Amino acid sequence: MAASKNKKKPALSGTRVHRRAVLGASGLILMPVAAHAMPQASTMRIHDHGTFTRLVVELSEGIEASAFVLPEPRRLVVDLPELAWSSDVSVPKTALVSAVRAGLFERGRSRLVIDLAQAAQLSQAYLLPPTGATPWRLILDLMSTTDDAFKAAAALNQITRIKPQGSAGLASAKPTPAAPTPVSDKPAAKAKDRKIVVAIDPGHGGIDPGAIGPGGTYEKTITLMAAQQLKQKLEATGRYRAMLTRTSDTSLVLRQRIEIARHAPADIFISLHADSIRDSAIRGLSVYTLSEKASDAEAEALAERENKADLIIGMDLTKESQEVRNILIDLAQRESMNLAARLAGSLIDELKREVTLLRNAHRFAGFAVLKSPDIPSILIEMGYLSNREDQSSLLKEGYRGKLMTAVVKGLDRYFKEPLVAQRS
Figure 1: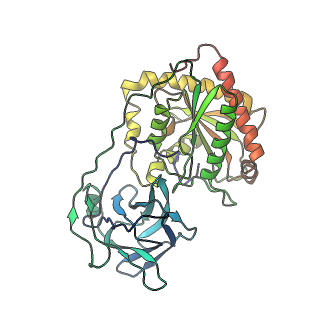
Figure 2: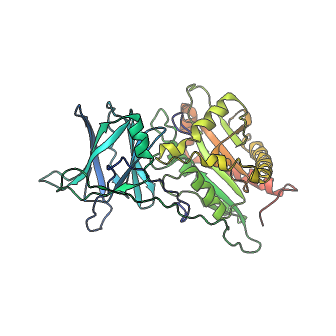
Figure 3: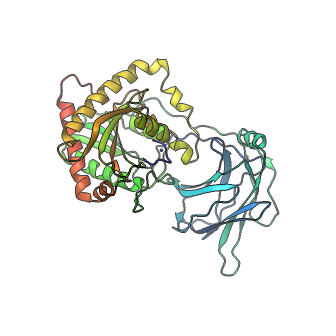
């Protein structure tokens, strides 16, 4: 888990929550051309023109897109069809833009998130067709605005449509209310005598890379490789059925990860991460379970960062964390927390035989991803990418395999213990 992020399979149908807010008359939907191979975004560039800042994305073809803004922190979010992104999509800071991130948001949809250094509005947005050797270009022009105007724009909950370049400026706004997709509360039907179902959650993904090691290693890459190995080892026993919350480099909001596990329906939820901290000398693995009060200042700070991961990928769902604290689910949550603590103990007993652990390896924090009221949930910090030795180990398939074998043994021990409730 990165210091800049919060801890931070394709998305399950029916679990997405869409919040559409547009910059007054500055949202956009660009007309598509005929579909064929996946379109590509080859380069991105930005330039401060004084009165406005222009961001240009070069594309292999015409596409559809939509833009909206989110507050706290201020962001302009652009949704596009799934694109093959070039590595050359980073841009420098400007007076209006502090950072730009791009990547796969979910299957079939890419997302461009523009972090705003100050309140800004999208003054123009259009798609320029190819001219000579110059490819299609998505043009986004931003101008500064007042805080009050930005907040008002973010609250409009509408989409503005425009046609491809040919007409100057933006089309008039046509409000389109956002409609959340309903989520079923009923878990999928289960066969009798089924295998134990383990939901494995590779942390981060898509436009949220997570921690970044000194050698440029992304946490999202490490967690997905480790999750795939754990799945293989669990299923090889014949006692478990394992499923991943994501199977590719895709962004998932925190509540989606929980809902995917519930629909499995999972008996255990294991989230895999690899943190980064300032002290590069610190290394070792730890296991977290849920607590409203963190076990120490470091754990509390880590949970605070991670629980804002939804902000990183352009969706503000922080209010949902209050939902899981509601008194109506308190008793169920406490039971799941108790079972998760027992599972953490079993895992640590096995892991300490194989890998280096932190002192007080069982830790407690208020991670939103652990707040499923009906599934015992744990989060494994496999090591620190800020430590070169941990980073080197986690890049090795053999080391990850040893670690995941210990996790399987820990699960075996947990399910052999008496009085452990398994979902029926």
